[in-house]
Amino acid sequence: MQFITTYKAYNQPSPRSIFRHYALNALSLVKAPSAESLKQKRIVFTCFHSYFTDNEATLRAQLEFMGKHFKFISYSEGVRRLTTGEIDDNYICFSADDGYKNFLDACKVFDDYGIKALVFANPKVIGETNYETLKFYNDDRLSHGPMEFLSWQEVDDLLTRGHEVGNHTYGHRNVGNCSEEELQEQIVKSYEILQKHVGSDIHFAWPYGSPNDISQKALDLIYKTGHISAAAVDRHSHYTRLELVKERSYLIREQIEPFYPVNHVRYFLAKDHSVINR
Ligand SMILES: [Zn+2]
Image (cartoon, rainbow, N blue to C red):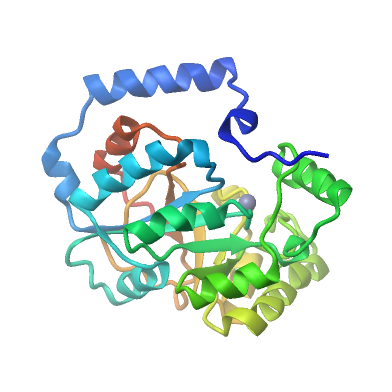
């Protein structure tokens, strides 16, 4: 009965991940984007999953680098600016998926930089402590070993400290292939449970994150329920205004995990991504 609490235990390098690491090292050297490309006015919504304390030096190095080129804002402020078009500087905000307990450790680091982050959680496992249940859920829904999730008390504490909590579906289901009844549970019931703690201004990020993992029906229900934004994951920065609710569009978060070396982060953020808006 042991939960994963270190990156060393979490990360099992595969030939593919090792190749990717060295390919990115080479790319960031050979195709290094210019410093100018870092200066473009935009909003970057970042997304990570887990933070482990043996990644502290890397996370701090990332934040030092980002702090030189971007202004740190909260996720809600990022969404507000995205919908009003106030993209008058380089902004970056932080979100984490899946509601792991290790988000609390990430926030200890974020606190040193004045960063308010958002965690997308799944109410089904908030406060769940049964080892076998957590082992099965982590394996079945998240494809890794047993890890712990936030408790409701910790959710409330995070909110008191100015961090944010969003909806990542009730039980980490792929809302691209849910029945009508399942969508009600994954989107609406989840919203209603979170609302009791968070209030009505709730952001949504769908599990697995690609456009294939969402349907138009699910997206319509997300906004009809009252969510103020919906989010995908891809390599992307936002340079122009997005009508999130009215046009049923979604924002795109850039995946930057706390263990990414700074040269990779620099490469991703400097690269001028094409604007892919629905
Ligand atoms: Zn997830």
